[in-house]
Length: 380
Length: 210
Image 1 (cartoon, each protein chain N blue to C red):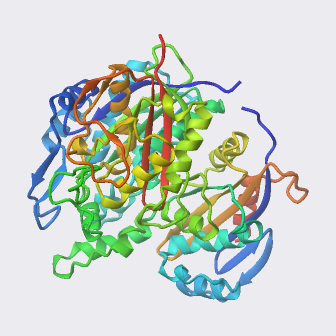
Image 2: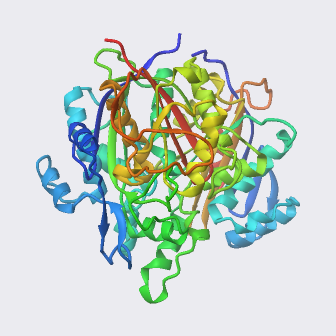
Image 3: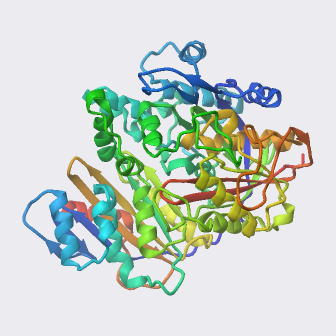
């Protein structure tokens, strides 16, 4: 029989807080990390983004290490993993894997024209730096699959636990707001001139954000926070920089994940969707969900709280969705006003109590990639 | 999970101005740069796909390898459940560096969406998926060196959990005109060609010759 797979620990480092509890409190209050920034080292014009103050990162990091060699992103990743590794008591031996997922990693290192800095821009170097901090014995596995990276990493971890290659897997995901990414989204004219408004009629694009998130994945049911019951990552095979008009890849990813989970559409209580607030992405999601008869399931995008945190988003949003399920509370889809997609979806407008037994997490990204993972609440 | 035996069906290496398919050299030219090499290879195999010329070097490298392995086994009339499991060391850094140059000088600032989109390693998976209409599993991994054990294990997981019928798996590394591709197709089908070989031995042998 195939092993069952669980998430036992979670953590996140975001502008709304440096642990899960403070993030949930902020979400319940309706706080958003997205603010107007004027920083010409990042962008010529003022821009909305969800950014963590450097002092906050440094102050928190100094409490766990005096080492100054780590980059800003590395500190954020270490901060996400550290309390989790400590609390879990898991031995970092040959049966413990480490997966790091990111879209751009230390890309800011490219601004500095030195060989050392160039080496630091390599994702395997980033992963090894983090692995060495904690003393992982196994070779770090880096997943870099655009904006599905964070949730794809959960899927990869699940598959590796199922196949009994490892007993425990620590997964971290992280990305920063950088000049590199801001200029790129701006060149695509994908940036919103106001805080992003996923699924809304007046949405004009993304607000970027930065965060790290971490989870512990294992076959251990005891004290588990959630069970991972199905997953799939299917490419659109349509366009490298735009989603499929029919939502084909997302449709198939969700369909496959539900099939593996042996559930029907009517058993899903909540969808934590991607919702970047670009016109095409949100429209594509609405079409895919309708094709699966999921249009009445309560859905949110957390981008209104955190901005689009790229490779971190899938894992960060999973961490928040797990709390949503365990607290039986649907969180508002911040920034939403009037429905702005052509097919009906049930966007959560205010925080409300609801029984959440099974939820779906989705993400989509450049390169035509999509990932869907189905989670089920654990009955203790 | 049922652990059925999986077998390598075919493999290809692209390096040093040469393409070797299943151990046989199928294209080799005098030393030149990758742009020229890839263009000549495209013409040599009579590939009709103008989008090729818009791709960055990493995508061209991955595309050429996939073209020779997948064209004989895919058709536009049927579903091709062929997963793509790729890895490299330098991610998309070759294009990242070019993109960074386009934004470094404020007097000469020209960020281009056509370049930015290639600052993701998985774009090459998208290009291959579009070309061969693969609505299938795809993931891009980064390792210091080709982790044949992980890649082989992960491919087997996809095959044994029926998430894919065939896996196109391999290493596609490109930085600053240094390139190497090693790709192979793996499935549960019987095959007498490679009975004792695995990704590791084929990769090591292909590297040894150079």
